Amino acid sequence: MVIHRPKPPSSATSISQALQATLHNDTTVNIRPTGKGWRLSCVQWVGGSPEDVFPFFASPRNLERLTPPFLQFNIRRVTSDPIRTGTILDYTLQLHHVPVFWRTRIDEWKPPFTFVDRQQLGPFRRWHHRHDFTKKDTGTVIRDTVNYELYLGPLGRSPLFGWVHGDLQKIFAYRQEQVRVVFDSMGFGD
Image 1: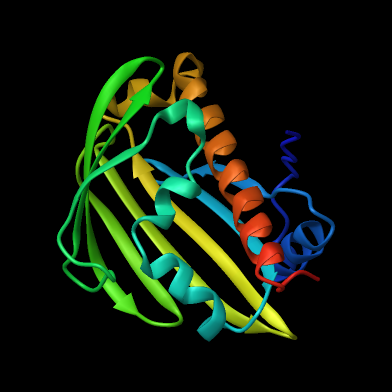
Image 2: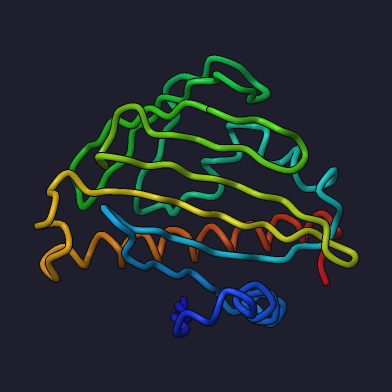
């Protein structure tokens, strides 16, 4: 899988450039430093309205389909299906052969346009993942914005931990490809 890492465009053009890239099947996963941590952002266009697209993300079982096999992702507990504000998801995965327990809580749930999950327990000091679904032409723009911090404080900015960002880019590029496959198979391709 090729990971396209363009230079960050100006904010006025970033969305349109990201849309153009995803319309041509390029992945656009960008990570940049913020005040205390990092921001991962990616944008993808799929056919279908937000009302068509959002229900796929409302089922926690679909999260397994969007996660790369190398993570050995396994949902252990979900407090509600479909997801809603307050839902807790417990899962395990493997990070470089190290088992990791992760718990997230859905802090915001506004179908079919937005939801936010926040790590309560897991490998990051902070993980806040916003999912936005916006109507665009005959389809939907899916935008993921993750603000995260490593437990290592300033040491986390060392090139020594660059592998974390590389892993996240691979994970989100895989996710974008799987979303494309799912919605193409549902008849929502371009």
